[in-house]
Image (cartoon, rainbow, N blue to C red; front, side, top):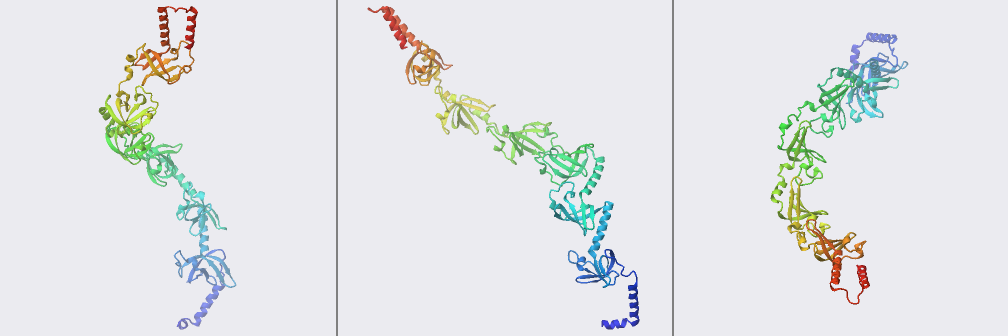
Length: 575
């Protein structure tokens, strides 16, 4: 059928004319004047499965792989009749064949464009493809460029992987067409824009102005904010009216903030910013809002060695000192009473608007148990209690919840020397005692056991008057004398000077513990609890008695003066 139709439409005369036309074209000097390495126009004449035929006015059509016209989804992006730019890779005059490439044409055109952009200091958009050693590769729409890591941003990027796949604008730094190398920079572009913004900002910025900025760095003491060409510092104390432990509690890198310019030094280009200044100061009229003795609740926001901070409202905190937490407990740290986040009831103790301080108390929420103790256990009252603790200086008796009474070691017995209370009592024992003092201000409660009985020393002067003869047991020997127990709990002292008329180096030469001796009372005092004894005085009385007897009876018959002298010397030697 095709042959029949062709025979009907084509005549020998037509064929002759077509041949003449073709021959003319072949002989025309412009035909086939295509140089290798140039870009020329071509028309798609056929779209095949593997190749695209393109007519570039040469002896034959050029073939281009269909892959150069296929998009990411696999679709062919060109059709018959379309005019496209192609690159002449090579040609064979003798065979009349030509080798074309559309990709290389596009690449050459792109390099031309890049060189033009470089000459004009213009910008180009590109997408970061992947990370490589020293930086990134960037797709500039057909040409792969290198972006050094130092040219990514104005400052080091914390997460370099986060930039992959994102599109940015770049400045072309260097082109090597022969090696197909292109180097681009984003930092140069940012620096130019930053400098331009800085100049504009310096002419318009002023104190009190409200500005917008982006968080670029966070430190322990504050936040650095990019205002667009100029950095400002927002100190941690200017972030919120409430206590902020670390700026990260309120902002993150890249956050856009609305801030107030607190101060601006144009010469040093230093800007101080604040965020809390955009909200009312909650400390205004604070004394009216929180009068003394007001009872309210709050949340524990911070614990320190000396107390706990309690938030009464956003931006307003008060301090409960550790001494104001409990009436009875002696706390080493506030964590023994409260924890972070606890809701607690407090009472306002004082307000200092100038220093923005509020003193709070927790123990004042309940009555002071010391007031109850003072009423319930007046001085002189007798009570019973359980021993809770024993120390060197006394024993503690539980009185009320959290209140202990102290029985000092000196108040256990009138007469017995107690070296350690543990010798007589143990924890858990129930004892009777008399209330000695109740000191609410200093929170001291003292008791005594010996006060339950009369002081035996009150009768000692009557029972052992000066001159009385006593008998006792040596209980202790010291360099300065002998301690002699005349009855249970009552001891007297024979000073070393009262032992003998002769000089005594140490009483241990003459006596030992347990010896029973006789002595005469030479001093007695109930207030001083002292009983002075003398052995020497007793012997002197004996000598006087013998002398008196001698004088009254006269010398015995046959006894001379020499005999009396020898007798006296022997007695002295025995002493």
